[in-house]
Amino acid sequence: MFKNNEKIVLASGSPRRRRFLEELGLDFTVVVADVDESLRSGELPSAFVSRLAREKAVSVAVDHPGALVIGADTVVVVADEILGKPVDPEDALAMLTRLAGQSHEVWTGFAIIRGTSVAVTREVRTEVRFVSAVTDVLAAYVASGEPLDKAGAYGIQGLGGLLVERIDGSYSNVVGLPMAELVEELLRLDAIAPVNK
Image (cartoon, rainbow, N blue to C red; front, side, top):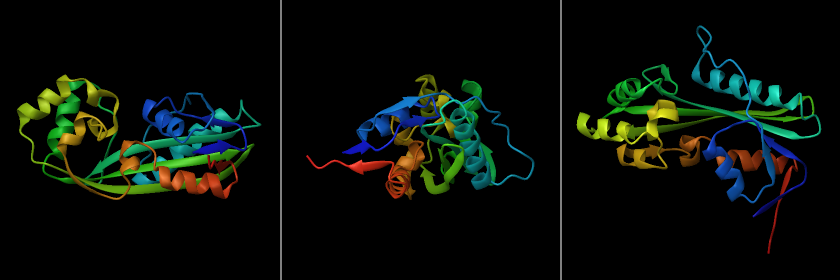
């Protein structure tokens, strides 16, 4: 669907983000960024994901000066509390129990670094409402193993989709990368171009 106009590096080990770029037809390299993902005191979700996306991209760009580097970070927010990835199955069940029957926000920040300059930093918010699931259903979902590497302990694109009653906003943002916004920025930067076959 698209072709590269320059070398692209994805500063993320997320298989979901990798799959999105593959589906666009882009040629890219994956380099996992190593940054401290601790929340700073008083940091809002939008600022947190934006900062982490930028830090991930910058840390990888240092070793890839001729490339356009994309960094991203996603968090789930409920009642003003940021939920990252669960540390274990018990933590995952606690997160899911907290989300059941409630609405929450998913924030993803992405940054695009070109050379040594930050070309783009954006944040995207999606509202998600969970069904009122019973504990046995949530426990069975945790036992599947799917929630353990995902912010908020669920993956909307997998079995976790059964827990979602509705969303307002970008679906791909909830998966981990707001594709409409990313493509818009890559086109604006002339980093990619459509291929009409």
